[in-house]
Amino acid sequence: MKRRRVVAGNWKMNLNSLEANDLVQDLLSLKHESARIILGVPFVYIASLARLTNGSNIEIAAQNCHHEQKGAYTGEISVEMLKSIGTDYVILGHSERREYFNEDDTLILQKMQLAHEAGLKVIYCCGEPLSVREAGSQNEFVQNQLAQSLLKLSAEEMKNTIVAYEPIWAIGTGKTATADQAQSMHQHIRQLISAQFGQEIADQSSILYGGSVKPANAEELFSKDDVDGGLVGGASLKAELFGPIIEANL
Ligand code: 13P
Image (cartoon, rainbow, N blue to C red; front, side, top):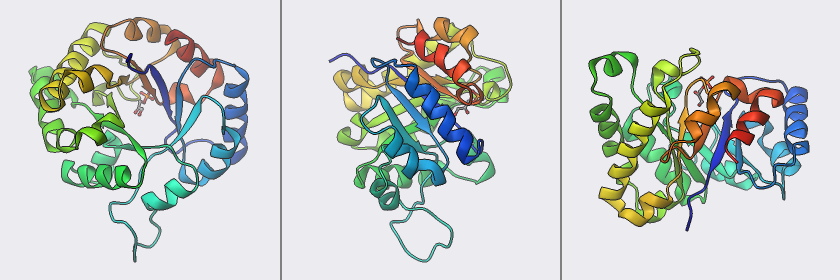
């Protein structure tokens, strides 16, 4: 089985309801039926966008979920709620949640397992800060992240997980990892998945690159053997930018 090529957008905390609808209508009209597209949208738009994209090649992701099944957690959103309104994926382990909401690998693993239990698929993010890259220890850093979360999943859970490598120094900075830097880390991640789950699962796992992906650099990044697509922030907010990135991955 060939692994899936994917372009995912992470809208983060952007767009009002009208803008969200317009953007998805524009993406649907691009008619890239062979592309697999996932949109990580704010909770409040999931239900309507899941209806709008039903039957298309666009799947909808939440950007977070709570780590407990249910209960007295005012303001929080559970995996079951997400599943019941048509959510396909949940993005977990994003560096912004690690940094601003103190999410550590133990919590991320808990969320991943809960999401899988509810029948959601996961986009799992990892990646090193600038200081680690400058010290040249990015491989050990990411290996450590994976060892505490991703590599503790069951094989079945791993099959329903997409990995996104997002070097923190490249997120929202305009500074992209070179295609060779991305390839080298993706290869490292695939080897770690292989060591834990076997070559077949590793070969089938989609590993996306994230961090200042734009139309100008998408094609080169996506041309690398172990780069199966991208997780795109800023450039996913405009169809005229996201469209060419989708095309670069066809
Ligand atoms: P940018 O594409 O804006 O750098 O964001 C990347 C990202 O964090 C996607 O999750």
